[in-house]
Length: 371
Image 1 (cartoon, rainbow, N blue to C red):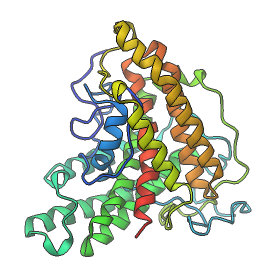
Image 2: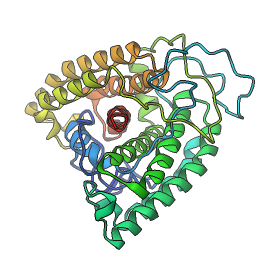
Image 3: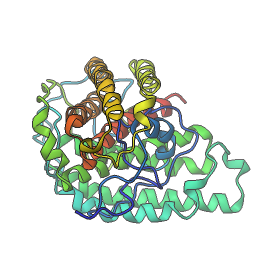
């Protein structure tokens, strides 16, 4: 297999060798995760937690996730056991009520690619280098033009993503598209009166988009298929989000979730505990590790396993069905990555990328809901 110099992540922020890092506060995010659909495993020398935490800000700018089609947003998530709606809105995933799993196929990836690539190209015209801390009244005419251009492009991408949300047979993939749509539109609407807090809206849609991208890469390069048998299936929760029209989804978190504070704490702690692992080169496969590198990897496995158990617990404790699905998605992909470490291959980093970006999406949604 020939590996191109750059993979799907924004700028030169490549897929992590380790767990996609901290999903912590981001002042600024990297460019959009443009993908050249097949040709590549992860880019060089950018690790998990370092990339994901310091990088969440970097990524956040690009992925607005459209709020999941749920009858309740976080703030009124009590109605969790809706009766099946009569209208399935043409969704191929309408009957997916099972547990969140590693996806080994998804026809929506083909639909998503040109949407993502077009938006990626537009964000690279200067917006990706913006100072997100500058409010709207202090923008220069050039800055205003950059924001408006990306806002329009994000909305256009959101409108096209509706088709992708209908094609996927997987509920969690549909929820990712829905959140991309909802948050992309919210970000576009916020540009006219932009404040630094609005950058967290971008943090959600950029991470939603990146999560979709990494899922598709893991499918394309077979890391999902190769590693899925290494993890046990999760139990399905009896209550899932009610179906709604994907053309007008709602943000999945409009008030901070009770789990937000602990989610942040766990992510920060894992980042602090895995600094040596973050420095490993993701291009070096397991068969090429030195004894020192192998010891670093072996030492990080129990920390990752603990983190996965804790975010799984937090997800189950949430009354928000979409939060539960995203937490389950992050946990199972990171478990697959962790299980793969003894025979680590470059393409396994895509699994870690899904885990990082989906977790970062929850982090950013928590921050966006604080205003």
